[in-house]
Image (cartoon, rainbow, N blue to C red; front, side, top):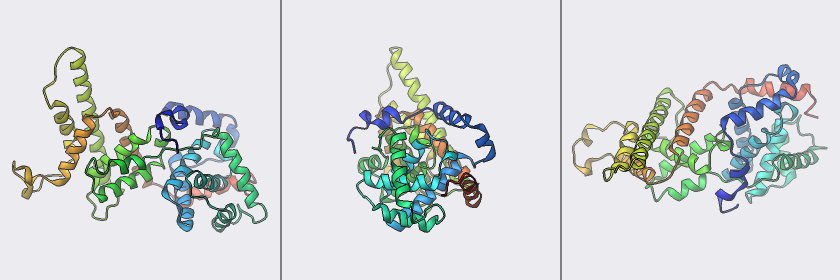
Length: 346
């Protein structure tokens, strides 16, 4: 992997605005409106959930590292910004993306082993006589459409590197890791740099780690917590802009204002103080509150794009709400319908 994200092809060629992504996808559908009308598909988020689940199923069977599973999902997203999904067999694409990602992430899998596993999941799509050749052909197709830009920088590295600096417990890291896993089911990998994703995941882990199991719950309560995080970031952003305007006008800030304003902006995300923790004594402060304050101080001293973190948080809010409506059977049937009707399973 290239050491410098800022000079990478990911930053130069594979980050878009939401409007750019929408225009690219609309252009693909406009090339054959009859095809689109004949085979309606679930919303994109449901397709991403389906792809994520299928890749994880294969990855679990083959004991593939999470980094490779994540890279495969990025390949799929990139590929489908160039090719309309109804022109492909998505099962061929996701298996090939995983095969290619394993090679790039230095955990290669034999092509025949990958084909055999794929045939176990989709016997009609991977026939023993052609499966290896089909994966090889599809691999060149993916590489071509991605312009041979195969190095992917992920948020996991930022997360692990900041664990000690931010004083994160292993439970915090585990939950943030889960949030990062979930973000691959959204458009965020095509919208924001990996360090912004990682910091958003850390923020949400600190805010939402209330379930003793350490899992991110998909409930209304967790969504309200996400909304509180988004509101707090928006407040912190407004305060940062006010300070910048004051500095530009020749004014001077009060010492420690940056830390105080960011901390107060994040105060809305803190858990309620228990009676046992009340009182001015520093030693009685909730340990989780201290972590959030430490993170707020770190953010206030950094050049992190708060607006980007706000948008990432809002995107995750929307995703978790959407996930509750996901119907695996319906999604699978709609994919199989156009695959069989167009003879893409042959």
